[in-house]
Image (cartoon, rainbow, N blue to C red; front, side, top):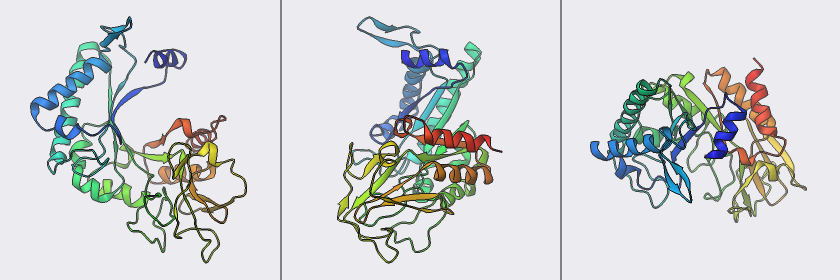
Length: 321
């Protein structure tokens, strides 16, 4: 947390939000949001620690107000209300209404803190790509009244949990997509708009990593797309996933792309990686601007190369008019 403080001293315009939940930390959110009392307790605890900055004292560090001013708001990353996420998660049908109530509790307590100390705090959320999860878990029109903006998952549409190679972050529907479910950014964003979201309050998430399969035949076009596999491609963290900074330097691969869908992929005759390079990032930014979205979010910065090629491409495209 002190590293964040030092970073903000160097870059005073930087806003830092603490994100609560995530794929591996949403296990107990359904329980925490279940009752009025549990929601109040969760929110007051988060505000006390992260916004008031009252940290536990550990090895002489921390204490009352020690982290005050470091965080400019709170981001909610419940994956997913009323739908299965990580296998250990608890989820209930009433999560949909409870999530709305939880967000309202955050907003009310954050508004009270704003009135107390005279500064503003942002409340945001990371939300699902799957239209079925959107319908099951979000009262979109009510939620958007309390969020400053939300970031929408624009990746993980497909991966090596499926046997067939596919795009993980396509902008538009792909003709001949073999499924088993078909996804696109276009369909996801429209699902939020249909439920009451203003496009300007939606921020498109893009991946700084790729997903891969191995044992892949070339298929009729020789590019490995929409072909069967023998399993996930080897990866440094887990099989089937690797960062852009590693994928960009692979030798023996041919680069393919679908410019309309804003996708790129690598294939070497056996292994297939769907990933986003600077060109794909510029295409995604252009699509987001054309459709009036509020901006771009990337997961995650450590996947970029040492030159910041992906972030530079995004920044340049956003500033390019």
